[in-house]
Image (cartoon, rainbow, N blue to C red):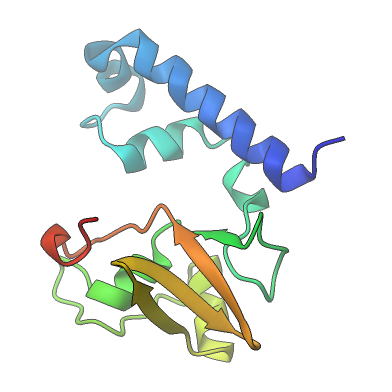
Length: 138
């Protein structure tokens, strides 16, 4: 049997894929907004994201991977709204963990790694709010 997190990730992926197959104009109509990855994630969520591993203190990573719903990207690069790198939004689940466990993030081959309790976790879906994507291109 699949772990809950793996099942949620598969279900979320299937929901996003179904949206993509509908086409951009239909997605705009459904979401009432521009078509981009955060809108797709938000619309397709159906509580799948809350099951994904966002911090090792909350739930077990999947194959040493943790998911960035936005907190890691905001911490690493700030936001386009004027928040500088190091920004923490403690209203977000991962952000609330950052208050308890300040993140130690490093890059290996331009890929983000969270070091926590003597373990290393790869961060997937690094959500770069600052839009300075050249710093993170692989």
